Image (cartoon, rainbow, N blue to C red; front, side, top):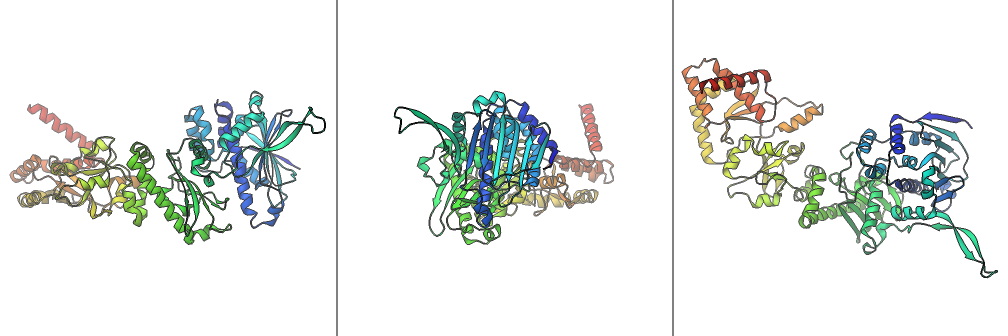
Length: 634
């Protein structure tokens, strides 16, 4: 049998270096990770055995076994799961084939030692945690249903060896050669029993260990002899099938960490049994922190799907809508067939019923938290509000339910405070027809924006939306009988007096307005007088259905092609600057100053909407020139 010496990929080397040379205070999580890996391997073998008779015959009772050899200084974690062949051993243990590896390494370096060990499972690198307590790791594995076996070994020196070998039964043995300073702790029955009870009591398969016990001789009374017996260390009963009254908060928290690969406790536990035409048990968790990769294209979401305690899918996306993809947990159905496939799920009536049931249960739980535990809900919303609001865009029938869960900053709230759509509509002025909003990147900048001057004068509350996707989500949205209307787009006039004022100004300054339109013909769609300005001289607005400026900047930053649509240049007819420009125009229609002042106004409008001036250098020089003139005149 030929032994191959191979090098780890760069990111694995970096990871191993962190594992070995950093000081961790919770090294014991290595055992949790290896037992979880063994449980996953048995899940896969158990599922495949439903249709593969060769797997059914090989391996006996499903179980995970811990074996201590104090003479050799080894701890072995064995399972009779799916196993690996040589190619899989090289692929799975020589690389980290999961997106976000570099992000994980960066985050691992940022964390304190206490937090770092708890992050290990989150990124699918649990196997490598072995090197926190072992200076040599040997893995012997046989692929279920075949005779393919592999022996993998490494001392974390940058290389690993693989070779063909022999193994009597399917599954994997992970043999840890425990470091000298760790032997007293991790080669003792008591410590291993404690760790299993703490982290893996709920594992669906027996975690066993051979233990020595003193027994009294039945023949020679008074004398004792030593026997070795295999003893189960975990309770094994699936936590989601237990009665809620029997489960402690710490048990829920540990199970959540197991299924979510998270190191923090969940914000909310949802545990219930649905009965009726479709029966299932659900144990769901609302996390307290956002996964680093939740916005990645290949992010996998959805609860684990079990059918009569057999795991069918690790991530069943059909069970939960995408805007609730942060929800973790388990759903166990007694109605679905064991051989259910993803294709069958997509058109399965029972799955639709479960999906609707879970969606309502999660929505109701969030609503209850918002109503009765607002501080906790606020913490959740700061993490997941951006994801939750996607439901308005992607789920038409649930959009008002989702809308009632959202929190908004507004011109009527203080910094860090929030309102709801229910409160907003209850506080609307009698003559107010629409719900007004403004997209922005900063709350303080937004509330001082010239776009809101008339709204403030009328006492109309305006929602300040700070996420880049907000305009796409709320454009065209209707809450109750109230339309959402952007303060940055369209021709807004809030009262008849303003409308009459605009008409009079259009007559009075018609020639000046024509000059401005001609001067800026290449830059703006048109120049017109505004009904939204009170103190500022000008602003740029989009057409009613145009893309928001913040959205344009977002798409451009992503390298997307954005149509170059022209904005509307709005002028304040009551501003002294317009009167002064008109006087100059009437005195000398060919004045060289007029084009400069028009350009100056346009650049000012660009700055106010958050864009760069058309000609930054020219704009700066003109501002300097005006400052000099003003200072000399005083």
